Image (cartoon, rainbow, N blue to C red):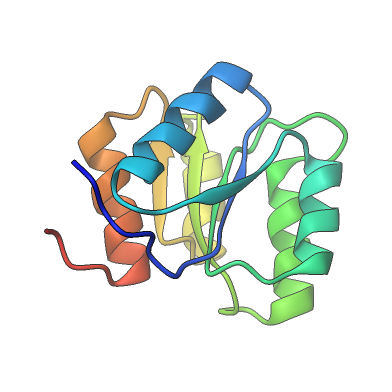
Length: 130
């Protein structure tokens, strides 16, 4: 399926190279090209450089954890300035509650099915399914 590139800036923050590669390919298939930060420190630098429309955020990151990355994004761009989908292995109620309190768009627990990721991204960005 060939699609035109959609005009969205997506930042994928994921330290697992294999998961990042799969997610980047899945996004590309729906026409979304994402920047990739392999750790929290690089995510902070990328947020400082440019505001993304959507951030796909792992929580368990080296150096700076995902919640601190989200806190930084909110300081830079306001409470609702960046839409966030959490993609994590943390399936505990405490982290899910933090996600609700932080008003993340979706809280997805790994492994994440392709269609689930696609639908979450489409919903967050307001993209119609084709």
